[in-house]
Length: 234
Image (cartoon, rainbow, N blue to C red; front, side, top):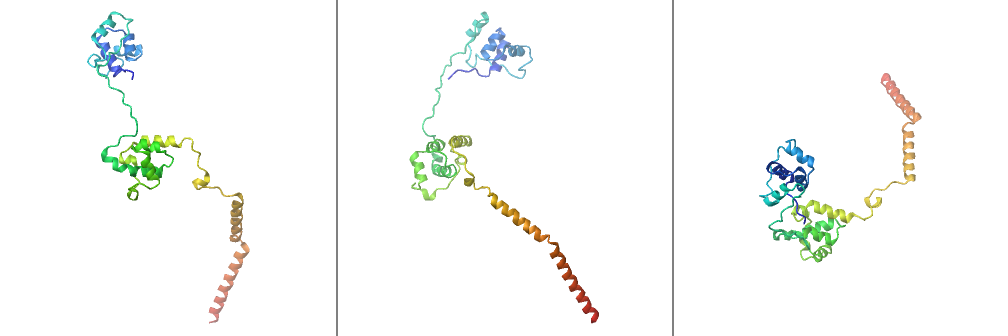
């Protein structure tokens, strides 16, 4: 793993204030532009940043600074760390705390039901289980199958939402897009839409039939006249 300078701008502030190094030397060591180092020296930049001593952090030695101050062409080099931490490489399934291992079957059942596109290897990476356990839950041959309840592995704390989304996205790549029939939405045929239009037009014509309307009005008027005549006769 490549060694990197901690807090380069704060280190540059300290070097500007406490050494006679050139702007180019400080810029090269701190991975900054020489003009940016000049702005720090002029007080135009990094005014609120407190300088970080690279000697106290073990990133530079006094001899290295003294050597660079004598030779402006000399390039500062990071000091070798006294303790090397080996880079951790996670192999195999994810480690699951003992307190949460009893929840893994419920999480596997949730993943199998809600994300059938996930492969066994992906489920194993997410919740830290074995392929044989996943197969047993798929075909309901698990010893506790009757008591399992689907539960979100993110809610259970077995994996993060980011990890789950990444695995689902990987599994979804290359899958054909769902058809309209699978989504339950299909377009009606032209013949059916024409029938709907004609039926609607017929109903409108029936509703706006003027003869039927006037006939009904005449019948109502005649009934009213007859009732008035009977009242006058009495």
